[in-house]
Image 1 (spheres, rainbow, N blue to C red):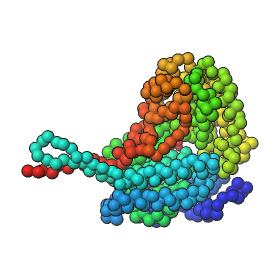
Image 2 (image 1 turned 135 degrees about the vertical axis):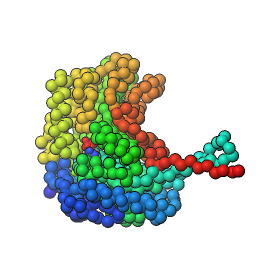
Image 3 (image 1 turned 90 degrees about the vertical axis):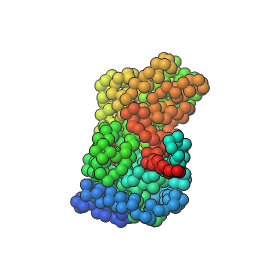
Image 4 (image 1 turned 180 degrees about the vertical axis):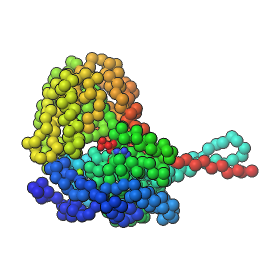
Length: 496
Ligand code: ADP
Ligand code: MG
């Protein structure tokens, strides 16, 4: 196939090998013997088959993780030892960066350039940041007034972590969960998304090479309602770390309730992006277009509701339309590609469905709006912009998770705050203004876990990430993430 000519040999070989589960440091076939197809969204062709895990495979993996958690090798490894191992894994990822970027690009349609310069380096940075925390998980001494006691706290790992991750940033999401869990001394069973399991499986090979004790990191591939549900409801799992849709997040919470498993959820979004009349318009337009079209709009924090001050609305819309029409949509592996295909036929139909619904509800397509068979046989959709959108339309309320923006005018700051906060979600928000008062006022009043001022889609391993309202709870990244993977133990020493 034409587009595969430039794949590094290691990727060619890796893709065509048999893909089993990674349990107890070994490759284990599915108990059922079943496999599932993995598609390349740029061509719709079957890339390879991977193991289709179920209850039995999950049980095996959870037992391996429980055993590794109790095992002396991991338990008694010094914090520095854990940090060194994590850093070694990060070094191996860096040594194989091109390979990991190509796998990601093939498997989920991420533009290669974005994988090479954005998401894979971010995953490596994240792991290194968390490796540094391994030696910094501290307790406190508490000045109790009761009796004569020395009172202190220990922060101990919560135990076995069940990590369930989505397909939009496969390796990065895996590392977000693994980084915090390993830093504090947990063990993990990871269930990658069925659409994009390959980078996690390649990571497993690097985990072995780095020298992690068997069972500390386990990976079971499979479908959500099978492998995912089995992991979420397994009584041996002490904490579920989930990133995905709000709907599945609710069902994860319900199954976790039975076992009192700790839960952190990073869910959907419908993030507002507000362009004030005094904004630097050139930066605001390109930043906002990145905000919605990066990764084909398949980002939980995509700036999909763009509010523009009425006095600059027409010219802004015109510039955005021109920007969208000029974007290079194409094969993910082509380094010139700015926007690749959406991930699957299901997602393709869903996004096109929303575009049709937006038009039925009275909104007007000013850019894109069509599937793009011309770009190749993959799941290509034009970068799409709607005007004449009202706040109650489905394209302004529901998460589309595709390259579709709604651009709406506003008149006053208080009005835009109210409208922005009408959403059930609260993950991120963008603000474009040159006025420091407006910037801080909006930052303070928007319901969002992250507010970017004069920027969009900037992330750092040290900066906490997570949502308000139905975008979930708990934070990834930063030291806040670590809290969700530890228990606090309070110790009383009688001094009399
Ligand atoms: P999306 O709609 O973007 O695919 P999902 O929330 O469906 O997001 O998927 C995110 C992750 O959750 C994937 O790994 C998927 O397999 C998993 N998943 C889906 N349904 C369930 C479920 N019922 N229980 C547990 N995990 C699930
Ligand atoms: Mg795939």
